[in-house]
Image 1 (cartoon, rainbow, N blue to C red):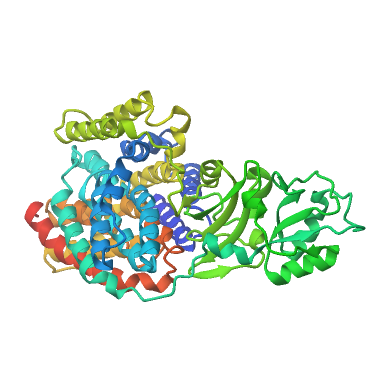
Image 2: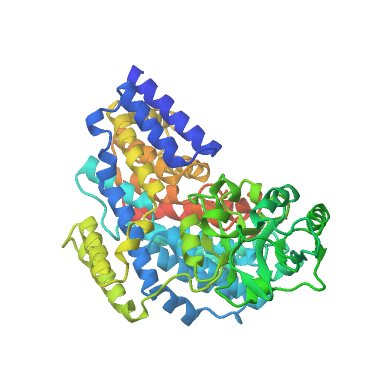
Length: 590
């Protein structure tokens, strides 16, 4: 083993270890590894940033913008509002939502597909009086499965196509993945819809709801002769923090003083609108000598003026709240918004809300100034769990958006135009047609994924150039010595699938795909079956909430625990392997 190989193996082991630990975000981990590799000389400084201009990176970014255009045009709402009905049985609902999610995720980013359908699924469940946890996991799995069927459905397929172009001279085309990925998706969807959802443990719906807040929003009035008269509201903040009370606003003479009115001097008769548990409220009241109002009122929500509204959101991996508290990000003073509640894996958190470190999958209840919900949601990088009109749609351009995208897919599929160019033209057309506003163009790109890809691609290339992938491939072939090629293919698929369950599937693909090519060359067979096996396996992350972003997003809204996923996920992964290997041997023979 050479010195370069030792350094690269050590770096990859460190990257995978850090990703598994999860303490630092994956883009920071990958970029740090790239910089270290450059300093140590295993990646040439001239090639260090080639990954950021790589076709795979560009396609991922462009697909996200195109997905946003399809949403804003109303194309997705046209489908869901037409087909989804709360009166259907649970099994019929799961089947229908799974089909919609699978089809959508084949032609748009599967994380975006889930983000669009999750609020619809939750609202439908609530209207039907059932727990959203019964249908959210099937929906998540369906969107993951659907992404396997096309080139643009999931990042692993995009990476596999690019690696094939670099290694074998030609990429996979748009629908080359369909024979294998499509069959795996259909088999998986059938299992999820007919059997899988019955394996989800029954649990009570315990996510926070806006209607629960009446127990926590109350008023305290300033009596005549109070020591607080003349003080600014901001001067009470220290006492509020110590008592774990949120000051939501101030009402004077029946009219709300907007926001927290931090610089307003208190007068006798003023009412402070607060959010707190009963114990915290009583501590705050007794400390300041305030009085409890005659009855609980809700002038904060209904007083004249701009008003406020309550929104329910979920924290994804790339939110600025992930790993930080509402107090740390300055939610109150930067966005004039208040964190009212947290639900984590089905458990309500009601103490020290503003100081609690938030995690991906947490459900939050936020009190925001009316008509600013969309801005607050975007600034925080969270996803709304209800259709509150946060997305501004251009319904008159729905067919234009669909036509432009369909034309680009067709042109790329028939080889008339290079896929990144086709998607780039769609983005330009969406901007010119004002389907996607120019001001929002870059906000729809998931920059952490771009940085991850841009950083890992040069590292993967260095590992291959140094002979590292050949060593890994040789070790796997040796471990399976004497077995037929199809059995070695199965082993590669299982190993890749296992890694993808606990690591980022993009990082897994960048390492596993070159290894697959080397294994094929060692066995003197076609590399295409091995690339297809890696593509399907890297997308099959069904055992844990950390293997795929979609599984993380449903963790809180579904009230799931870490161990709930494998109940349906393990048989699903077995089915995927069982149908994929024969399909690969038929459509991509060794």
